[in-house]
Image 1 (spheres, rainbow, N blue to C red):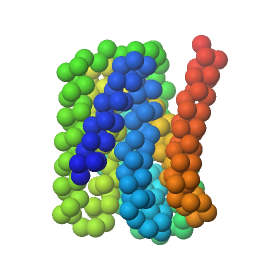
Image 2 (cartoon, helix red, strand yellow):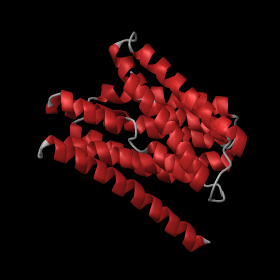
Image 3 (cartoon, rainbow, N blue to C red):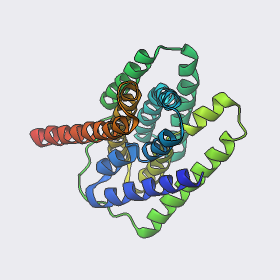
Image 4 (tube, rainbow, N blue to C red):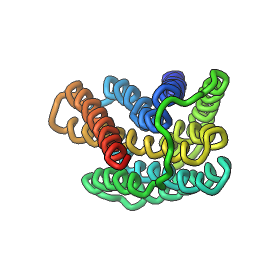
Length: 255
């Protein structure tokens, strides 16, 4: 619990600091990366047999389309609604789809393909609102509130997962913590366009998240554990940064 809480705090703080310097879209991209799950999987890989780690990676990929649905629903809701109904609708989408997907019993290859396909569709399904790139004025008190809120949500999820039924516990642990917390601060203070930019960036980072877990799942079947873990990080960074640069080129071409 302590490790996850520390990683959640670091993710919320670093993402917000990056948004302060480079803009909401870049902060969202960092938040979507496996900043929490990646280090945890490293510790799990050190202490757990490879087959168990592959099972965890596959279970994570099964839930990934639900996370994408959460982000898309929040983004569209943010264009019309305040933060709290947008948050509620996004979590209805997450828990509804997240509860359904494991029941389908899809083969591993199809779960991986569905996760990556959902990321592609999610990026295309995001609303398009113009927002000026660049630094954002995020006061220090707001940074502290973001970290505190993320820690509170993480603590409540971990405590609830400890007493909930197994199926619900797995879904609770897959809840996108920063994807819930950061938009709730961005929407009321910076507006819908900034929130959409944040969430679109989150999908880009989540593409790196998906690449991490697909590479880890496949790599552990063929390579030593350390090599598979390192290559998973390389894949995550290459995919997320590549999508970001591609988006920058598109924006420059239309400017």
